Image 1: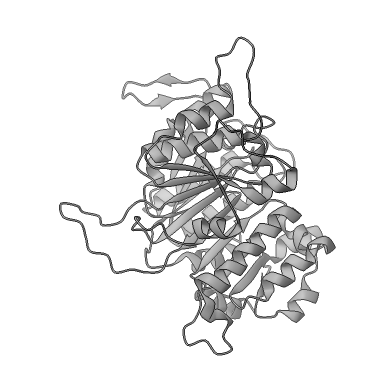
Image 2 (image 1 turned 180 degrees about the vertical axis):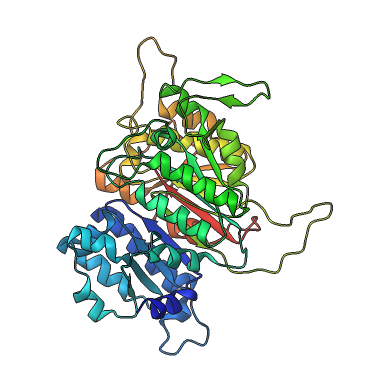
Length: 422
C-alpha cells in the first residue's frame, strides 16, 4: 500500500496546503473558494472528462488537530465541494488518525483516488513526511527545507511534526532549517526536561549532529527580539556574534534580518499552517551582470487572530516589513479575526509610546515591496469596516484573494510563492 501511495504522490508537484491546526468553518469556506478558483480559473482543463494536459494537484496535508475538521458534520459540505475538483487531494498520517480515533474510510470509499493515508510502521520518520518531500521535488531541486516555528514546543505535540519533518529531510539529504520566532524560540532553550513528551531540545541537537555528519548545512536560528523579550540572557562574543548560555548548542540567536535572509533563498518554508504555491514554468532570460535570474519567492502573510490577545498579528507585520525591506515582494491580507486590527480607531494610553497595530500598519505601508489587503467577507461576517485612516489597506473579495494566493505577480520571476498563516 505504501509503495502504491508513494507512486501516486510522486507526481504531486502542484500546490500544497500544510496544517496541524484546527480548521474552523470560516477557514474551510475560504479554502473551498481557493480550490474552486484553482479548478475553474487557473486550470479549467481539469474539469474536462478527458483533459489533454495533466493538472497539477492541490494537495492538503492534514495533521494534528486539523484531522478533526475532516469528520465534523458541520464541515461536510465544504469537503464534498472540494472533492468535486479532480485535482484536489487530502493526505493524512495514519498515526495521527489512530491517536485521535478518527476514521476516514467512509469518505475514502467515495473518493479513493483523492484521500491518501500513509502506512504506520516502526520507522522513526513517518512516511507522510516522505510524501510531503516527494511533492516538493520540483524544478528547483532545492537542497534545504525550512520551518518557521511560532508556537511553544510543549503545547502538546505541537513540535513533534516539526521534528519528523526535519528527520525525514536529513534522511533524504536535505539540509534542515528551523527559525524560532515569537514563542517558537522556546524550542531551543537548554535544560528542557519534559515528563511525558520527547525532549525537543535534545532532538534538535541530535538532528543537527546527524546533518553535519552527512555533510549538510543545518540552521537553527532564533529571532533576537523574540528571545530578549522572553528573558534569554545574551552577550556579544569576540567575533561580534550574539551568544547565550540559555540555548541548546546548535541554537543561534540572530537579528530578524538574518532569518529573513534565508527567505531570500529558493527553498520551501513551512509553518504550522502554510501554503507552498507552485507557479507555471516560464522561460526566463537571465539578467545581465547577475549570477541569478530569479527573484526571491514572493510572500503572502495572513494574520488570522485578533491583534492584542496574542503577539501573532504584530509578529506577522514585523516579519512582513523585514521581508519587504530585504527586497521580497510581500503582501499582508487580514482575514478571519485578523480584521479586528483594521476596525475602529486604536488608541494606546499609558506610559508606553504609541505602538498600536494601526500605527505600525500606517508607518510601514509606504515600503516599496509591501502591500496591505483585507478580506472583505471576514469584515462582512463580523459587521465591521476598515477605519477611514487606513487608506493604504485595500479591500478584496474572494476572487482577488484567490488571485493573490494562486497566481504569480506579473513582475516577479520565481518558481513558487510562500503563504504563512499567523
